[in-house]
Length: 338
Picture 1 (cartoon, rainbow, N blue to C red):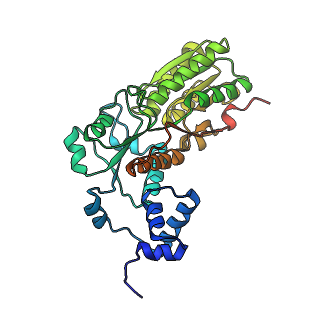
Picture 2: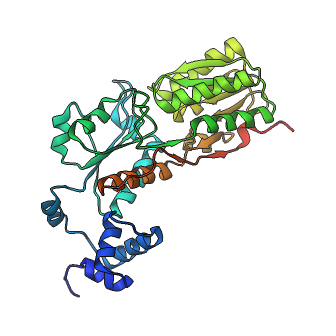
Picture 3: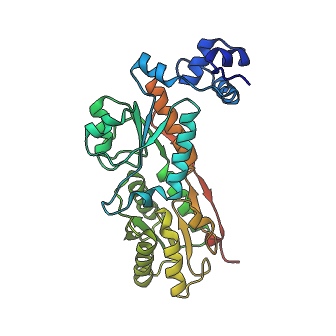
């Protein structure tokens, strides 16, 4: 068996294209048809092609590495608690796959304190997930003149175009419409305290929907720390005070806490209380009964953010902001009583 390194020319010969076209397809440069780009990537993988990163870095002065930054909302939330969330695991996995197929390594970063920390990583750009208001991490990339894409908006940078986001307002209204069609009249929102754009947009859409439909808004705050316990306590407060007939749990791990609070009050789901989640998760899918939820499709978000960043790195001007589709997964927890 030959140990010769597979080259761009070998891939070009296999797909019947010029080495220049193959190089552009693999490196995100030039105008290459998406189907052709995918065919080249698959062939390169089958042949075992690996880009010569050392040569590339010497020629361009760039490493090709992409930084992926997960959110930090409250100082006492452990980093692994955020990484363990189903949404971020799927987003990070899809971002890595999309980057690897284009020859870019992905670095999941430690907390970054200043520009020097980011500079020492030697990355060419970054993807920042769920930035806070005027997020300092976005500012670090700006300070080094590096391109940065955010997953969801930075509320303090309304003009930043390189954003991949969901239609949080439309998704929320669709979920509320589903609850109303199932017979819910008093719908409460268990809102997170994270200060993220998606959470604020969900809460604003909820209040606007209530105003449009002549409903009283019932909002109770829950923390992003110890999510299940916090949601259990918050759901108990709103159930004892306002007795809603439906609760929308905003964060991923709120669902078990809401169901526990309902059980302790002998409330049957969905006969007495309908429960829904603004973010789908294993906790929603595997609950008893399974909980209706908005599937944000983080796989699509992670891949789209990396594709946008790679286009920026190649000198392109990708269209932005980009809105990725979500799917409402209607399950037993909200179905109308028969």
